[in-house]
Image: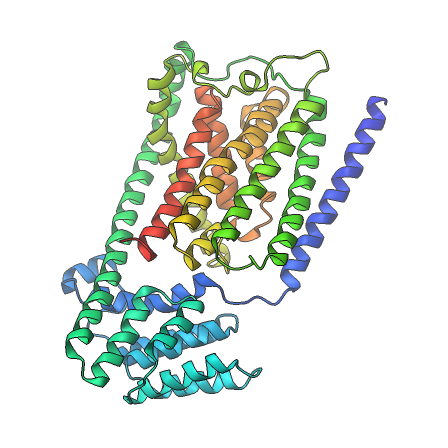
Length: 477
């Protein structure tokens, strides 16, 4: 096949990929959105922050900006949660959580309104009807006999341990079991306070990383000549991959991403793993691993010359030996690397928030973790999002795409373009700027260090920190 014919085929394939992406996003936009675990946590946070706020002095609450302080009444908190729920996509689970909050604090009018809204739709299953009736009695201060059934139904709807303890406390207080009422009340407040404590720590740690990242980005231009003299960086070495095949490999990798996502989505649906479960987390990890295997095969088959028999790892720069200082040098890049990624990503998030407002959804791994905080689910998500995804994404976008582009269009253009491609292929317009900024920063880390292991580890730790933060805040002990 001539070079001209290859280029025509590449652009035809690109057109097909763009059409597939457009169809994918149109289908997603046309599908009615349902409230998910993140929305349930958003509603619960009104009460959770109120409970946590009672443990802090007023000056501390004002300093850290806690919403829902002890001066706010439970009625005001429940009404705020009710208003927020109305603004979110309709969901029976979401309404049930608001009813439970209203029942836990005895706000009868909100409980009555939400129950009426739930009853106005399709007929409710018998178990849900019984639970709703129990919660309505709790809101009125009347006793019930089946608290275990209420707890089971709320757990299925995605309610957290904080809300379950709040409902139990109300139930025990009504039936006169003051000891258990006090114990569950303390447990709810302790859970809420722990979550806010962790959030505070994460916010201050994030601010520290952002400050360090800003300093490092300011210092790097002065350090680069010294680092280059010591042997750090990609230097002037040409890419070991075929420049003419860059477009084909990336486009085919994107098509493979769409097809594997579709296939694994169908598998998840057939197995009933569309919600937050360990099986869903396992399928996410398997999907990423499958995509990575396909991407590696594409790079090996199309991206390399037929007479190039060198192992792929050194060609990518995927090894500690690529760094002059080896292990110690690798470790020295990690904290500054994470800090610089934090600075550019959070700056891009603020810009996105200013231009377009908050995102309407969370990433799938976070959504699964919010809904299921089991150790198995957490471990599988870590395996997929913090091990497999960083490795395969860095190989394609930094090791192959950026490495090929830098020799033909220059480092700066290659950094920006490879970052934009990295952001775009996630098919998440609301996070395009933060993801592109992260991708560009990871490309710079590859350029400055000379080892692909640096962006792989930084990317993995960045994802891990997000997962750990969510898990500890909402599920940790």
